[in-house]
Image (tube, rainbow, N blue to C red; front, side, top):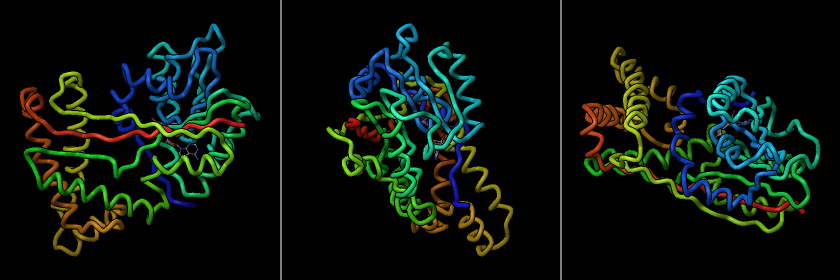
Length: 314
Ligand SMILES: C[S@@+](CC[C@H](N)C(=O)[O-])C[C@H]1O[C@@H](n2cnc3c(N)ncnc32)[C@H](O)[C@@H]1O
């Protein structure tokens, strides 16, 4: 069986938090030409963060509804719980299924969308999934894919140029590493319009919605920033480095890093660079966990573009 990347509900929700909100949602609804009466399918819905954003626009009294589909039962369980906690259960349904054989009849939905799913596929799987999305879309309906391209991502630590360099190095390594290890394309975001056209969708368009996060921005709740720091700058790197500290000799350390970081290794990052990156992450995370003042004075930027490709089913 082919290797497959899996996600934890917690880390998935954390990366989605505060992404779609306010004016950006209006922009999204506009790009998707989404109406309250629409039947929508959200392919590869995960914990349903994007599904919930779509549901907010729909009106069940007008028969508007979104069905999220995913193959991962654990993520779907979290998705059902979260939708219910948000009071959206009457507009959302979740089904287990494969993107390459969606559990819907032809022409089922007005909008068939996905977010951050096509990058997790080989070329063949991507084409099969888009063909399925096209099949379940009504004539005149819209198929849409929201996908990033990590070469448009920026992580800038103004007080730590070496950490900034290593993040840029990590981005380059991810592009190559994901391709080699899984056959995935981390630059898929802006490449989709050509595939949409090839598959017979008409009126292809490409939009981009920027996501910029400034650590000191007080519009991000402190608890969110603390969770991000806790998970990615402390917990994961500490887990990695604490194992290494117990190992004797460079040979064992190198072998362990190459096994636990196959993507970065395949992408050309050396084991020493990976260790340095994680040590600097911990130093940064420790500085920021000193308290709210440390967070509110930190001018670190994380930014990227969500590309949205849309096309009409003829
Ligand atoms: C990065 S997550 C994105 C989840 C969600 N769309 C979001 O943006 O929060 C990718 C999701 O695609 C799902 N997925 C990947 N390949 C799939 C397939 N062939 N069929 C169904 N789900 C799939 C994974 O289980 C995972 O939940």
